Amino acid sequence: MSSQACPLCQTRDGEAYFEDSQRCYLQCRTCNLVFVPPIYYLSSDAERQRYDLHQNSCSDPEYRRFLSRIFMPMQARLNPNSRGLDFGSGPGPTLSKMFEEVGHSVAIYDSYYAKDESVWEKRYDFITASEVVEHLHQPRTEFNRLWACLKPGGILGVMTMLAPAPEAFATWHYKNDMTHVSFFSRNTFEWLGHPWGSKPQFFDNDVVLFQKNA
Ligand SMILES: [Zn+2]
Image 1 (cartoon, helix red, strand yellow):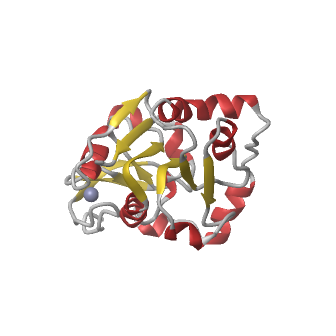
Image 2: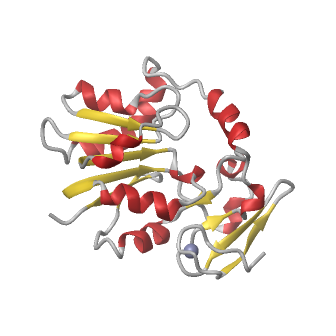
């Protein structure tokens, strides 16, 4: 298993991190990502079935409260009438609506629900990836694609539960969703921001912002 390439940094430097009845997990010694080997990836059909069950809706105040954790710190840093992209907008786009309600315009992209490839031809003042990076099979490719679409001075906001230490990992519910395959930590985000020249800013235990140099 240790010969598995890390999906983020591509080194083969993983060591056993945890194992349960469903899957085994490795941690990359280079970027600290905790990941499951590709043999555990679900098929596209099985993933889609799982996502179809998500009942998130923009009229649900609880869901809006949840998303406010990424919305608030980003909104505090945006100029009026900014242009954004919500990557991984899901079956019931809500975060994009919240930004539009305060005057921004937001394009959406989702590999299952809004596969509009023209979004990659444009440049954005801000990009959000909420509850999506833990699902990515190729996080490095996707992160670099998002970063490339950000204007100078722009902000990339990511929301994903930060992976706990091994002792707490055993009881961590987040890992039990079979569509979750990549688990990030502060160290991983520091590693990710390094080649971008961007130091991540953390909020709560699940939000991180990167600003691109102006
Ligand atoms: Zn790695």
